[in-house]
Image 1 (cartoon, one colour):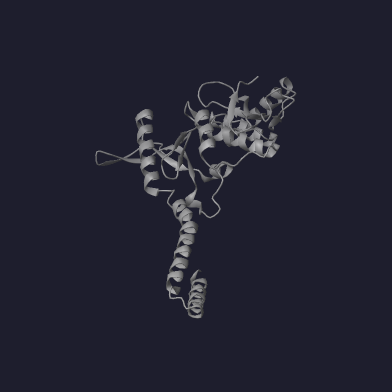
Image 2: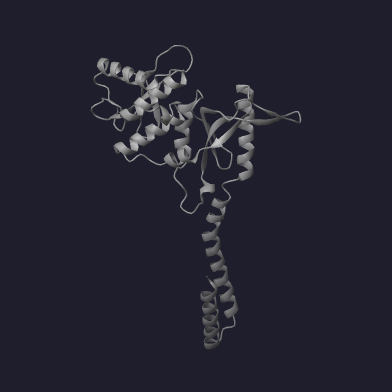
Length: 293
């Protein structure tokens, strides 16, 4: 792009040298060439540096390290499975980057179906199951954030907000609710399949639970259970509720989001329960779990 201006400068320098009797036209051309070279370096170097920020080799080595660490702790071979649908809720994409160049990758922990042990390929019965545990790793492998399923989840998420490109809260109820949904999934082990955001889904989830525990009349049981629950909890609504300053008395910028969800154990004779996950969303976008009323 600098070829044409360079030739113009050279021609101008030669004409000026001939008219004035100077012999240093080539020296002037050399100086202009040097200036143009410096401009190229200034413009191109930042782009080159950014392109080298992400290291596939460094990322894969860190993934291997985390999988090895988790296998030692959990007693089973695990793998990290990338969940881009959750990444899209929280991380700001780079303007000139492809999807593979995301600054931070978010992974869910899964058990492996097949794995090698002392040169023998083994299969885990019922392998491939997913844990409600999540790990975020920077694309160069230099930063690891342990989220859901780890005791440091909230602290590491707050650190992630400081160190990475994360979508800032706009202060609207939609952005606050979206952050609460992300934290419910990725920090607090309450997946979207458990949320109760409308009554039709609630009934289906109840029937699904009774089917899972071997009840033949699952839908009739679900209807009776729901009728009894509504009679004893007339104020309950299958939806999220958002409260914020100043009505909550919390510090400016804080919101509290309550997400109702169905807790339905598959073992024992315990009945399903409707619980409430209460999340405080701070002004910096961090999440803190509150005790339910």
